[in-house]
Structure formats: C-alpha cells, structure tokens
Amino acid sequence: MNIKENIEAIRADFPILKREMSGLPLVYLDSCATALKPQCVIDEVVRYYTYLGANAQRGDYEMAAQVDYALDAARKTSAEFINAKKTEEIVFTSGTTEGLNLLALMITNQFLKQGDAILTCETEHASSVLPWQQAGLAKDIPVNFIEVDQEGRITPENVEKAFVQYPNTKVVVFAQVSNVLGFNAPIKEIAKIAHDHGAYLVVDGAQAVAHHAIDVQDMDCDFFCFSSHKLCGPSGIGVMYGKFELLDQLRPIFFGGESNARFARSCDSLVLKKTPTKFESGTLPIEGALGMATAMRYLMNIGLNNIHEYEWELKQYFLKRAQEELQDKIKIYNPNAQGGIVTFNVYDKGQLIFPQDMASYLSNKGIAVRSGQHCAKLMGEFLGVPGTVRASIYFYNTIEDIDRLVDAIKDATVEKCLDIFF
Amino acid sequence: MPIDPSYYREIIMDNYSYPQNKELKTDDGEYDQRHMASDSCIDDITVQAKIKDGIVQDVRFDGQACTISTASTSILTQLVANKTVEQAEAIIQNYFNMIHGRPFDPELVDEAIVFEGVAKQPNRIGCATIGWKALEEMLQAHREQTTKEQEA
Image (cartoon, rainbow over all chains, first blue to last red; front, side, top):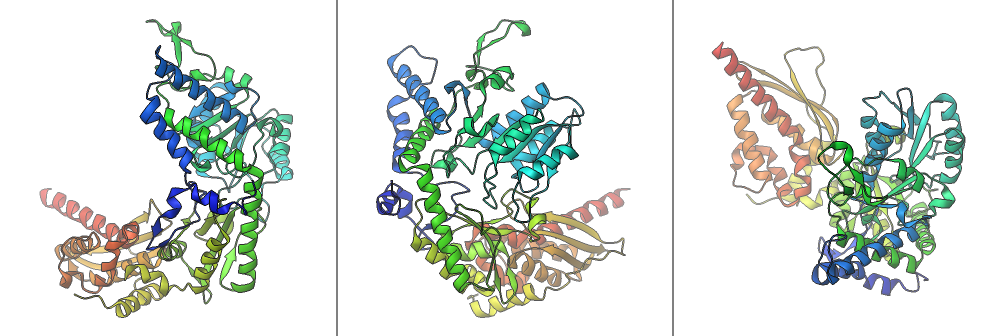
C-alpha cells in the first residue's frame, strides 16, 4: 500500500487521532513508547468480550472451541509475522520485558555455569541489561559491554573484538533497533559471530517489529522478544520466539494451570505440556493475543517495508527543515539512523532547554514526544547530556505533523517552556 | 491572589538561571543530605541541610534538573533559612497543599506562590516537589533524632 496516497484513509483507521491535546489537534510523535491502535484491533478486543467470551484450551463447548481456534490462528499469524519456521516457536508472554527476563533466568540457570559471561552494549534498554545482571548474581556471571562506534552503532568488528576480550561470553543480547538512537544492528552478522564462538544470540525486537519486516530464520537469532503494544496491538501481550530445539530444552520458570499435562503428589511426577504451552501457565490475555494478531495483519497489509520507507522519508523531511531553519537551535544525535526516531536537544541562545521542559512545552502545542533517558540510563554517558527529547514517527504521522514540530522548536525558549504553568 | 504571569515567570527564570545556594558543602559534618533521583524523569539533585538547636540554619543543593525543580529548590533554600523546624514544616506542608490544589496559606508559601500553576500540570508535580521532599525527610529525621536524645 502506498502510504502517502492513502494517508487520510489510514488516519481514519485510528479513532484516537481525532482527539485533541492542550486544545489542539493531536500530533502523536511517541509511537516508540507505544503505538496508537486502529479500529480493527479495538473491534477484535471487543469481539472477544462481547462474543467469544470463553477461556482457551479448557472447554468442550462451541464457544470455547471458537476461542481455541482464534488463539491458534493468532499464534500462526505471529509466526508468519516474524517468519518463524514453526508455530510452536511462538510463546505468548506479557511483553518484551517478560520474555527477556524469562530467557535471562532460564538460560542462566539451565545453560550457563560460573565463569561464563553475557555481552551487551552501553546504549541498550534496561531490559537487555538488568535481567542478566540479576539472574547472574548467584553464579557470578558478569554482564560485559561492547564499545559502540562514534555514532552509537553496534558493529560486527566490535562484537568480534569483544569475543577476544571476553572469550567466555556465552550469551549476546542486543536490541535490533536501539530505542534511543534508532540504529538497526547488523543482527545477521552478529548471529554468525556469536554462533562461531558457541554463544546464543538473544534479540530485543521491541523497537524493530513495528517498523521492519522481520525474518528470524534469515537473521538466525536464537531468541527474539517483542511486545504487541508497539505494533498497534493491545498492551499486556507479546511474543518470546525461540528456535524450537532450544525452547524444547528449556524448563519454564512459572508452573500452574494450563502448562502441565499430568501431576500427582510427588514433585517428580510432573509432566509438562509440549512447547510452547509449557511456558504459558495460567490464563493468557486472550483478547490481547487476538488483538495482536489483528494488528499484525493490519501492518502486513500496509507493508512493513512501506512503513519503514515512509517513516524515513518523514524523518528526512524533518532533517532537511532542521538543517535549513534550526541551525544553532537543535542538536540531533542520530541523523544517520534510517528510521522514524529523531533524538535531539533544543537550545535557547546556547543554553540547553532541559528535555523535560521541552516536552512540556511541546505538549502545550499539542505535540506528544518523550523526554529523558528512555530507559537506557547508560546512554547519557555516551551522549554527554543528562537526557534527550525523542520524537518517534510512525506511518500515521504526516508532513503537517513534522511541520508543527519544526515550527514549535523554532519558537522555543526556556521562558516559553513555563507557559504551561500560567 | 490573582496570578501575574509575567512577574511570576520572571521569578522562576531568575531562580533557574541564577539559582541560590546551589553549591554543596563538603567540609562541614553537621549537614545532613539527601540524594533525590526522580522516578519519572531525569532530575537528579542532592539537597543538604544544617539543622541545629531546632533551627534550619542553612539549606543547599546541587545537581541537574529542569526549570521547575531547580527554581523551586532555589526558592525553598531561601524561604526556610533560619526558620524553626516547626515553621519550616508548616511552609513545606502549605506548599504541598498548594501544589496539589488544596487550600493553603499564601503568606506561608511566600515567594513559592509562583508555582501555584503546577497544580494544573499534574505530570510536573514531581519536579516542583523533589527538593522540598528532600528537606521534609531531613526535618523528619532531625525530629526523630531529637526525640531519641530526649528519651535517652
């Protein structure tokens, strides 16, 4: 689908775009935090509550069978969405963070031994760093950091170098797309390096899935986690993908209803269900899984490559106007990251406008952006600033949205940031 | 009291651009201190207080923070200087009432009245109170210490 030619129709799919913020038409530039939801996703969630209703994989009546069918279809859609080899490689979780935490615990406890090490990088989201640090405490398994290049990119050369420096690395964990700078990491090359050294590659796909066509088989990553809410689906649901033979070896962290096939009084009598159901104890957010699958079909219909191209086109438009009209006013940290993320700071006669003040100022102009460290607390050290403003563009944004952002930045002063209080 | 935006704005700007008491003491063991890192944003400040004989003798701070955090803490350090612990607590309590949109005594909050508008921006309440909470904690600690000493 040509997004530019269909932008009005696309925007009409998102009822929330009709609302106002601060009394002005909404310019939503925080899709990296969470994406807005199209009507078809909302309808699917409502369909579960108003028609399907039953629990999954438990009932022998028609309603329950319909739910089972819909949930199976959602798993198939998820597999297709990231081109997994088997549907059984899709484990439903509450989101990226849960997936990454489960993997950190399971892999550390079951695959690693004292002396092994984890490799990540300093520009990563907290979810790629903290779970491994915590999981590794008991076995004293450290998390080491690779160096990024001058622009903040992960390069295969630096990963290779890190294996020389930390030869005991057994797990490499990176975001495919950094949530702050938006660079796309060369996952396929990194996977090869990791595998050559006998290490697993865990990929945080949270920021990638909504903006790129994902092919886990081609990338050859061992695990890939993502959240539904970043790709226009409901919150509280996501996917932990793993190569089947690896998932099959892992023993779950949680136990309870649904994940077990048989059990008796003695602990060793537990028979778990097969992969992936063994990882899904308790009732899933069924409406979330159905809504997520609807969102995936919606995005595939528009075309992930089209989405990526359109975002990059809008970002280039922003960069061009910034270059022409915002000299000395703005510092952009990631002009070369080809996607929809623009990370910047605004200056008033050479004085930094504190990122949170800037975000409040923009809010007053009806523009939603994120300010701060974006959950990547080590990033500040890399960029040398306390925080940044992040505008993240998605396929429902328009040239006019970018114009409003540029015009607002042009007009910004420290003093005007106080307008919201008076 | 009607809000005069330009005058209030000037006071905030002045305290942001030229904050008062923005330097920590490193050579005086009588200062208590609190490091405050906001949960929701990147404000990261340390507040010091020298509380002696029931008097708040000096309050200082340092760190990186937004206009509202910096200016509100700067004004705080001036308002409570040389006040009794009870007076300082009353000022802080009234300020919190104002920030949360509850009835308050304008005379007690004095110059901090410039932050009255924060009440209508709930997502910035954390900024306007970060330094004040630090002092509140230290006053509380001082109180507990004093009670303990009296009991001993």
